[in-house]
Amino acid sequence: MTNPHAGLATLREQSPAVRVRTPDGPPAWLVTRYADVRDLLRDETRLSVNPDHSAGEDYAGFELPPQLRPHLLAVDATQHDRLRELISSPFSGDGLHRTAEVVEEEAHRLVAALAPEQPVDLVAELAFPLALTAVRAVLPLPDPAHQAFAEWAHDALLAPRRHENAVEVRARDTLGRMAEIIQTATTVPGDGLLGELQAACQHGRLSAHELAAQVFYLLFVPTEPLVDAFGVVLLRLLTDTRHRAVLRESPAARHVAAAEALRFDTPQGLAAPRFALVDLDIAGVPVRAGQTLLLSLAAANRDPRQFDHPDELILTRSPNPHLALGRGDHNCPATALSYHLLSSSVAAVLRHYPSTTVAPGSTQWRGNFRHRGPASVWAHLQP
Image (tube, rainbow, N blue to C red):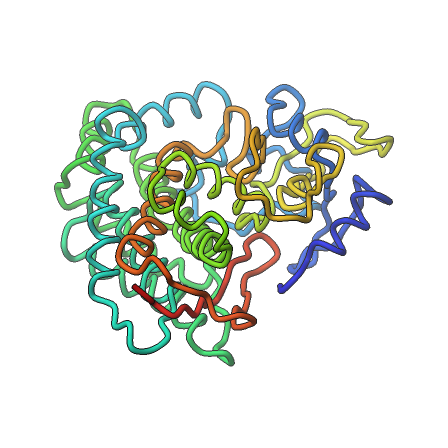
């Protein structure tokens, strides 16, 4: 977890498409070079994200109940475009600005309430609550679901970070709790995007299963990667003191720096599984129809064929065509919003405590074979 990049670099140079065994046992093809990963992310003709196209022998992600399967990351073409349009309101135009303002205000409130007399864990005290704030701002929940979601997030995401010997909680093991939250969210009349999705279901533009699956996607899919993204950006931008003044004053500079942090320590190391619709040749390696491809965003983002000095954190790197938020039709719909959110966390810290330092050597990393982020970022808040 501390440094996976040496191993990924070896694979990238020696075996750019290699057969691997996943932690659950089934195999898959791991693809590591930037050009291959970028092109395959955009390939909607020869690849599918729908597990129905798996031949059944390879890794296909963990099994979801039928009512949660048609979510945005697991459907193709026309269905994907329709679902993406139905969830677009918080991610563009006025909706994007309203969502960003909610998170920015919460960032300043949280930082103002911190006690500067002692070291502060910015993951627990800032990254985690801001991720929950962002998810709730995108999909406002009725009160019972709101409280249950907060408790799920604490138990599944925060508690394992706070306790070194805590047992890792796998998402699949909390599906029962997820289903209860989704049931409440889809049956109690909601506001904002939730209300829009409920209305779409009532008017026949969304099936009941599609409604439940989009609530699953909006609540549970982004939360952990967003906590990790906040943690990575806070760690990397606050550790580097050379650009402190410009990061404090310039949203554009924070955007550029956040993009570099995501490239350097990509929170979501693997894209959602892709399934070959036809026989393929990738870097000279034959892949059969029905087999699974795992596209390594983390390896691609350190590829020296694409990035000069890829193992250096250069907070002014521009252009920066990193793949941390995906590429193609299945890229993250919240890409523009994400930069606003990540920037707001750094801005809040630097405006309240402009001389903040990160305790050297104190960061521990956690995650699984698809996600990685700081378990904690200990900082000394200094005015």
